[in-house]
Image (cartoon, rainbow, N blue to C red; front, side, top):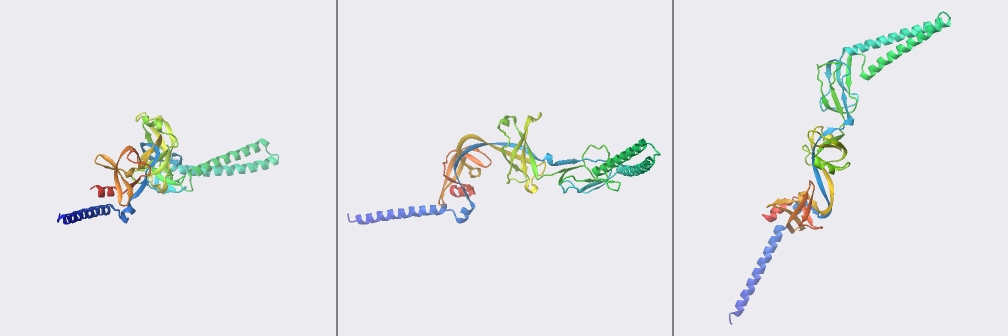
Length: 362
């Protein structure tokens, strides 16, 4: 009995020590899970909310210029290419010289111009003389009428030759200058200095196109055709700019199938800001459409896959962050729909969450 106070004192001391140790462990644990100001500035928080479930078609396509803004330039005369002033990919202005051709045909047009001017001058002088004789009753009226017809014929021939000069852009030399008909880029070039051209050449020398607006031509598999609608919003990604999404819409559906690939083509129109999209670029097209049901949705980058499960970091406070397993219904490029594990109002970390996950679970 005499030792009872000492035993009681020792028991109280043991309880107090255990309590202090537990408090210290809790404090250490809280301190270990506390996010710093720097880390808070690096993460992004998103709130879980219910959304209409969307599905996504992924299509393969390529960038092409707007055909309505593309002009092929053919040689109007044959001859020798004296000079080529532009290269493939150059930006040209309307009326800019593209190439010069030295041509015997141009020399012949010059001869026709001189001949037509001479014939008109002779016809006019003949008409003047005939009219004077007619007024003096020295020639019949039909001679005067014939003289006027000759003037009209010579005038028509001169107008025809002048129109050829205007169409061909011929000057006073024997050279034929090829000029750009529009502002745009040289997207095809099939001519070099010293090349001999035939007057019946059927191949275009240059193709000039405006690419401020471009098209993406994509292939739709036969099984996916019912899902594609005119006016659908489209997200386009390219290898050159993997982090940038180009927004467009389906503006034409080609209602025929390619006999070889059995795929249907669709066209997406895009604004080409900064001319980043180049003709013949490969593109991946994402078409989204609603399924009709609703489900919790979060950014796709929030998901962490580890140990054969999908996880998200649920944020309660800077010192309380929960690692929670979730079941995924569907994952798209930007949004993931959750079938279980989250509820509306939960806050998840959607940027740099892997750093927090490693800190909490290692």
